[in-house]
Amino acid sequence: MRRKTQLFLFLFLLPVLLNAQIYDPTTGQKLDGVTNPISTAVPFLSLSPDARSGGMGDVGVATSVDLNSQHYNAAKYPFMEDQFGFSLTYSPWLINLVPDMSLAYLTGAYKFKDDRSALAFSLLYFSMGSVTFTDAQGNGATTFKPNEFAIDLSYSRKLIDVLSIAVTGRFIYSNLTLGQFVEGIDTKAGLAGAADIGLYYNQNFDLGKHYKGGTLSAGLSITNIGNKMSYVKGVSFDEDAEKNFLPATLRLGVGFNWHIDDYNSVGFYAEAYKLLVPTPPIRGIDSATGEEKIVAGKNDRVNVMKGLFQSFGDAPDGAKEEMREIQWSLAAEYWWRNIVAIRAGYFHESKYKGYRQYFTLGVGLRYRMVGLDFSYLIPTSTISGSNPLKNTLRVGISFNFNKAQQAANKQKKPAERVQ
Image (tube, rainbow, N blue to C red; front, side, top):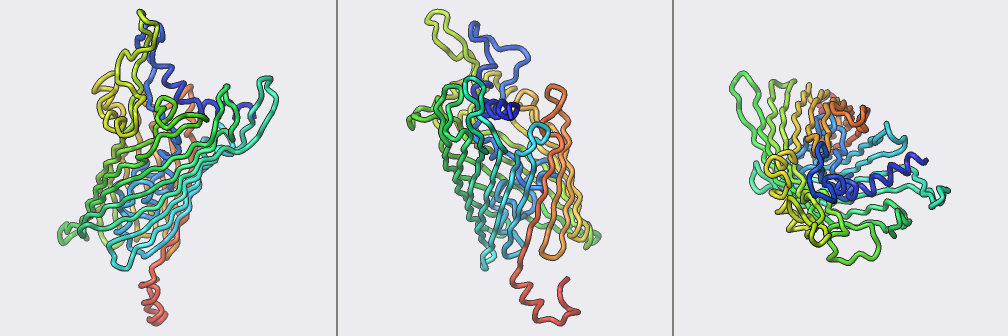
């Protein structure tokens, strides 16, 4: 229990710890070999929650539509082939550190009969397992299970036959401390509201008489634009220094799915991501006044909209550091007869900005209306000789329903029914 408590306190105080490590408080000089990552509240919103994308390097903004598109780009839903469906994914999280942390994701989508618009919902739930808070003498005081969740609702519509748009509303709840005093701080549950917007392009092409064809896709989404979150009681609405940004993210991606013949297809995808959150500046002490000052970079204690635009040019180390803040992924997905899928991908994040670098593998199975997906993560970066993401496994099940096809099947003879 003690190890888990220490881990929990580290996660809760992470923004303070990260900001405190990037400068010398006396000279204000940047410390050699120390990274400058961007920290946010509710980082679970940035995790890839589904098994398909989890097997493809966490790509998702420009891939073909599936029931889990809500997390990456809800604008894909009008391109669904089925009328409605739902999906559930479960992943044990950081199992090398603690045994009972987990991430669960439930989604559902419905495409309207006009074949141009869709409605979708999702629930993302993150459990940190059992945590014991101790008093000043180290005695056990309270044991409970910290949890966070986000509930989404989206509406998407085709603007033209090959281009769609979506808007998503999100409610976020984060209860990390059960109102306990943590390091002398009177805490509370965090609440926030956020919104996403997405665009999706999907165009089929004829590749000549020897091939069935291909589909070019592209996607753009801006997610988690919402109010800053605080876990401290008594913080006023405008006290930006005492609140944390949500993980607002810009995603851009492209892909091409080559339909080789009636039985085989393969897709290739590339995506880039950037947090729309201010970079922590380098702070030091003014020798004349003894007060804190910014030595390099810009003030990150700003409101949400200013922080969003400022995030494109506020890194203390200039353009080089701005480029390091871009994460990217590459992925491939092979389908045989739309029954069996084999997936692979790679995710890269700079070692100065979090150092998440890993390969992923995945498989998918489809039979009639039921789908199963599995993914496995293979880290290539190490932290103190290991990697907390090692052995990450995601398992998902989905159900797709097509009322029109089912009705047509009922009218046919058994031998004529679609299998």
